[in-house]
Length: 215
Image: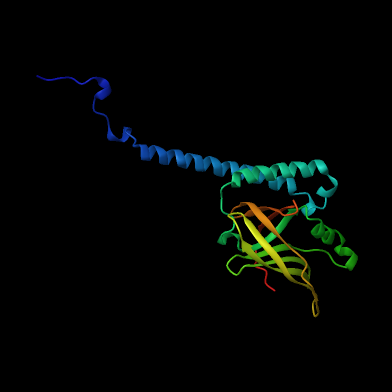
C-alpha cells in the first residue's frame, strides 16, 4: 500500500533548506555591510563639512558650522562604539585635517608673523614604544615638536605625559621644557581617518599621512 505525502512534506532540493548557522552568517554579513556603508556615508559627510575650514581656523568664527561638525563627529562616535582604537592600527603618522585646539590654531594663524607659514601638523604615534610626537612643520626647514610618553588605559583611551619640546631650524635647535599631561580618546578609527576627543573637550580629525615623520 502506497501513501502519498502532502505537498508540504514532499521532497525538495536540499539547497532550499538553510541551517540556523547559515542564516545567522547571512544576517551577520548583511549587518556588517550596512554598518560599513553607514560609516562611509558618515565619514563623507564629516570630511565634506571640514573641507573648507582651513583646519579649523574658519570654524572659530562660525558657531553654526562648529555645531554641525560636532554633530557629525558624534555620529562617527556612535559608529565606532565598541571598537578597539588603541591597538597597533593607532601607530602611524597622522596629519591634522581639523581641530578645535586653540594653541595649534593660534600657531597656524600667526606663523606668518615669524616670516613663515605652517605646513603639515602631525601626530606621530608608536603604541609599541609608548611614544607620541606632536609636530608642526614650517617648510622648508623649520619644525616645532613635543615629545611625550603614552600609556594605553582602555580600548579607546590613551594617557600621555609631555617630556620635552624642541623648536628647530635649518642649522639650529632650541630646547623647551615639558609642560603637561592628559588623555585622548580615538572615538573612531579606520584605515584612512581617526576622530579624537581629549581631556579638555577639544576635537581632532586626522588622516594617515603619506609619509612617516621622524626627528
